[in-house]
Every structure is written in C-alpha cells, then in structure tokens.
Image 1 (cartoon, one colour):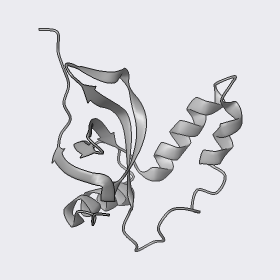
Image 2 (cartoon, rainbow, N blue to C red):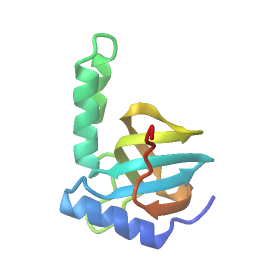
Image 3 (cartoon, rainbow, N blue to C red):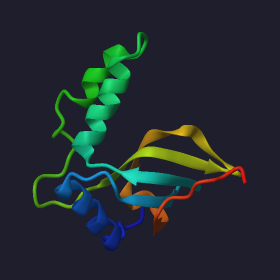
Image 4 (cartoon, rainbow, N blue to C red):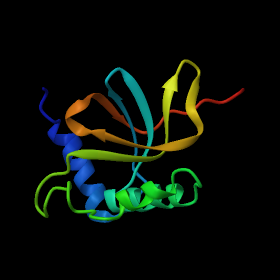
Amino acid sequence: MSNADELLVDVAALVESEQSNQMSLTVVAGGAVITGRLAPEAVWRQRVSEILRDSDRLGPFSGVFTADETRDRPGRGEPPTHLHFHVARILQGSMGIPETGGMYRVAIKDVSAWTVGDFSYSDS
C-alpha cells in the first residue's frame, strides 16, 4: 500500500474547501490514465445521484449517494482520501472513454502519477 502524495492531497483539499469544479487534473491509477475536472465530493455525489435517479433501472441506487453523505468522508480538518472527477475520461489509445465524460472516484493513495490539466484529442 502506498502513501498519498501530500501535494495531491493539498490540491484535493482546496477543491473541497472552495466548492469549485474548475481544477483540471490527469492521474495514473491502477495503470489507467484518467483525465478531467475535479469536483467537491458533495457536488459529485449529488450529480451521480441525479443521473441515477433519472434512470428507470438504476433509480433505486440514487439514494446511496445522498443518504449519509458524511459516513465515509473524513471529518473537518482531516485530509481528503479520494479525488472526485466529473467530465472525465479514461484515456485509451487515441480516444477517451466515455466520449462525453463520466464520473469517477479515485483513491488518492492509488495515484502513481499526476499532472495539472486534462488531455483531449482533436480530429485535426
């Protein structure tokens, strides 16, 4: 088990404190390259809940993301343990999956490399 990168924890903590979703980041975790924007956990949970609520098959899972939002979260003053990506893609060859961007939660301790900014592909 690796230790979390303190600088990355500081970035995540700033996203949490500012309630901002404009920080672009690219990480390598478990061999996957994930690129997108970070969101505060509460915003991320709410958005995932809304997406699930609108699904006929997955609607019942919606409440899991809003029921007890503080259950697994660090307390105030404790550093964040996860990155919450939205409008994110897993980079695979010359394309990002999904094309429109998805919602990903990544444990900070599992990040082996990272850089500020996101990667996108163009057809030109």
